[in-house]
Image (cartoon, rainbow, N blue to C red; front, side, top):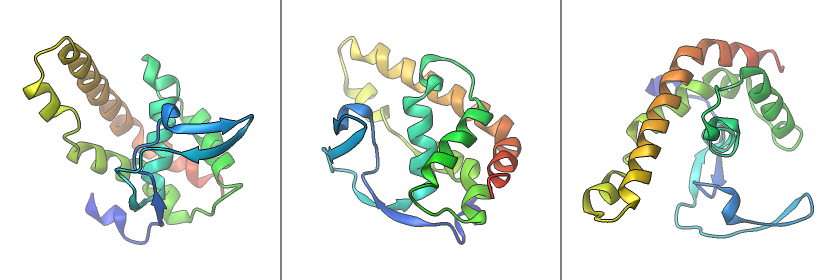
Length: 147
């Protein structure tokens, strides 16, 4: 899967956007807080991650390929994505997520009820990886139809 990183767009990014880290005024983001993860990252990682974390997938619903393509289309009004970006997006997401140990250390050292929340998150993340893996080719094809 590392081959999917060749030729993709990297951009300065916050690294782990969630709605609680955005200060908004109406429909506009005014500020981003919590820059501990700021780095130059694959733009497509942030796009897919933000959709999955903030979208219906977070509530246990299935990943909607058509809705995701519309999400990416909206993003492309503001920033350019290449054919390579669109083609590689689900595979880069899977590679990045499969390497993540987020929550693991916290679970091992935690002695609170937060352990259940960490386990729930781990099961959810595993399920979304399985679903994206099954739909990766269809996601890639739907995104390529945007250009």
